[in-house]
Length: 409
Ligand code: PMP
Image (cartoon, rainbow, N blue to C red; front, top):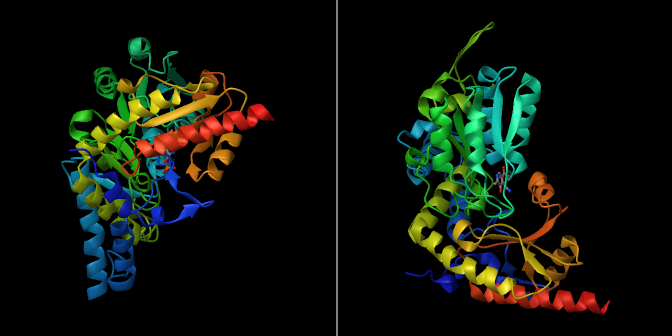
């Protein structure tokens, strides 16, 4: 069943507003998605009805807040098919989740002369933490290259794994620039066969497709709530035995069992990795976002974007000055980065804004992949459940207007 996009749009209050007198065409969900009323209501309900700190008080409000917070964790666990709810760690965002692994696991297991393998298409969040770990440890950082078609060239991987020095392979499940869907299951199988750990950046994938951590081959998977209709909170899922063996990343309240003057003992999972007061209403909001998305159905969402993406690429390709980056529609998710000959992406962004259209312009926190294609920046249109062909048509019309306007100048 195709998604009823007008009905979905009506559930997002932001689409009632206009931008510069035009209807809002929101094409920047890869940066952050809009929020349905159900998520806003869930957070307001916590604050106005059941708010207190969690895991501490013995009074009714504290128990209600704790139950809502832990109920949301259970929803996240089901959403990614975790076998154990204690494997779900609430963090600030995907960035913090990856940093947690790079510090806690990385400091213990990566040594001088070891290798960390990442890919050329990583977001800085899955690049800089590994680059800096490698620097601190005197380890090597190796990149799986991207082909001219925007695909990963995994033929280099056996050569990077066969000496047994690779400790970790970190890879995005979907690129935020090219939309590329790397063969993560295959990469994980190769990495595991060579004794390396696999960290997956699910920030772009989790909002758009079903994720099953038990079959995808990840040891850790990080993603952000704000890209999947939820608020600003993130998730790190990790395999229990790995998390059990890891030292805490942050120290303080709630992550301890006992504290004496000279030493402390750590709390059980997942609390060992949740120092201090968490983002309580945000975590509950994430649970509501997951309810909302699973209500629509993740396979249906994936199918909707699989239908919209070829239409978007075909329509954009009608503009002779426009170059779409990345692979063909069959091998990517619903993110389309492009350049327009003679027009700086920032000007594209500003001119589209006059038409009520929101796109991202810049390097999208992924400089190495732009360097790979010898461009400093690009414009990016990204699609989600509330977008349809009308949005694509408005984008194409506005881009044509941009081209003719700048040609006249
Ligand atoms: N990885 C990818 C692929 C992303 O697109 C993003 C967000 N742009 C991140 C990681 C980081 O997400 P956050 O800023 O929520 O930590």
